[in-house]
Length: 443
Image (cartoon, rainbow, N blue to C red):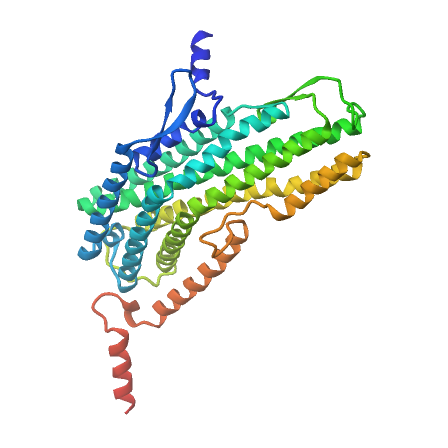
């Protein structure tokens, strides 16, 4: 039992920074944040910025820049080892160039916008005081376990993918250069860890909104059962809300509870807006590079399966299709993680409005009704929203947008291949030479 308790202790957290310790350890290691979690003598944890963290970011910027530029100049890439055509060369260069921009944006944001991330976490930490005012003690074990689960899932997928790709290359006596290996490794791993950071922060907003919604629902339930008076409330009751990892002690007037809920909701929206300023350009570059990779990988797979490819490669068709399908799935998971993380927080925020209006219809007190009307007005003007540099919203409508754009580009690429003689590969004539020959023949 003592061993089980010691193991269980590692999965229980009572502070916001302690719950994010594994995540910030990894982001600090990869140079994505200059912070790491440290613990004071009194047992309280906080984020500390270090000179090594800043230096580590500059090291990664230099390493990424050197590797990407070298790969771009030499025309080398992992995809190039599988096959090389005019379209694949263009796709490779676009991916390397886009990856260079993505790395620059992610690492630059880690330096220039570090105060935005720190401000977001400071607001989340200060919310503990507001929750205690309405009798809620937040437990961070669920956020801690969620961050561990996301990290393990991402790292496991990346590990299997990396091992599979490099074993496949080694089996055919293909030895990638150092720059190609680093470009391939950093692009996938840095993007995945940046997505983990966004998902965990978005999940933190979702959990706090869930607590607010549950407190308001609890208030409505007590009105329905006549166990709570509208004006004078003296009864104390302890309610354990295990599904939301909190305990609520009802000791306050409903108007005070609604006022505190309004303040908490305002702070959550403020923290979400600050987080959006930190992640907005990172999400734009990540979604852009994911879309680009998905388009070209889907094209390579479809071209091969439809029998239109006349590629010359050491790899068998099964190996070829497996590699590009896995890479495509990897970035589909990336987009789904971003969209679902954002969408869950948005949906929780939207549910608050319905609960407030339900309370508004049930209350008999003029003071409580006035507070609820103020809360309703606040919900109209303060909404959680994540965008990619303001160009498009990050919610489930993005699936439809990406699907439409993907279909359009795939049709264009497949038509280009069908209309090109010899599919544009090998030593066949180029499109311009073919056009000249047709013109001369006609004349």
